[in-house]
Length: 339
Image (cartoon, rainbow, N blue to C red; front, side, top):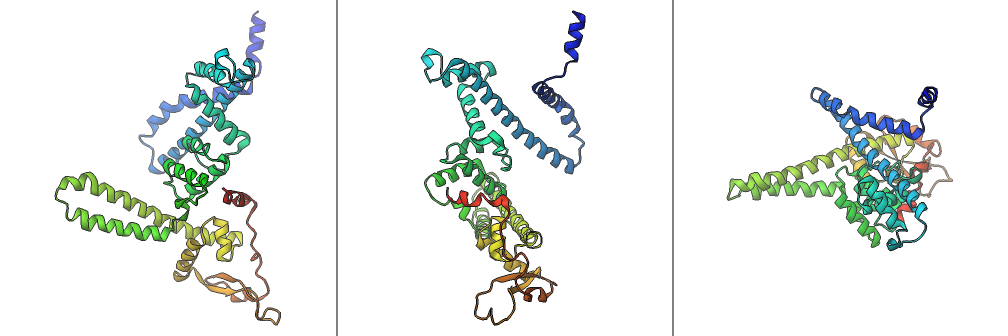
């Protein structure tokens, strides 16, 4: 008996047992990590917070798959149908799983749906969305996967893109409307918010009959507006960096190619390019090709030119890579436009 016990204890653990041990070790580290945060420098706190945020997303995705697999197995034991009075069917199976996991049956059903429609086969690997609510909202769209990709794009452009914005996005998509959040122009928004901030200061704060109104309402309101202004300014700086990178690294030499590469509107890109020209990053637009008999009268594209870049590069036939083709990771854009 002792030999048998020893042999079984030395047997290799199953992959699921190894996963269980890894998860238990992570939860055991929590108290130790919390203590060390008191003396951690700011840069490490930012990094730790980012990783913890991703771990939160990892946790609910694992839970969704667990609930989906438990539901499948319970349903397989009970047979087909939805006859709750007979104790068979998917709802009866969900109740059984809910009892075993201390969850509500509707949670089990929703988690299983999220896994099958949005998580299975790594479908959500590239979205970058960690909040589960985005996935729940996506399920209400006619095409949940495409809706989730649209949300991910908006979140990338606007870090403050909220679940409330996501609900409005799905409502507009289902109704066949272009969502207002996708129509907004950054420069217009910045000018509007500048005016709102001045109005709050000059009209509301300056003429407030009670100090209490300023401290309880107006100051917080203006702080929120100013935060949004700073976010838009930061986004504008990042857009300019991305434009230069697209030019240098991806061969996007025209406004159209840059807009497609960055998935931004032509209006945004052209406004940012004009500022880059004014700042001296780009010097001017240059016509593609030279003045040959074959090209006379033909329409030639205007290519951007970096400051200090030899002008002769643009007059030796077509510019290398100027016939821009978007990379393969943007193949889904046309499908998204059909939403």
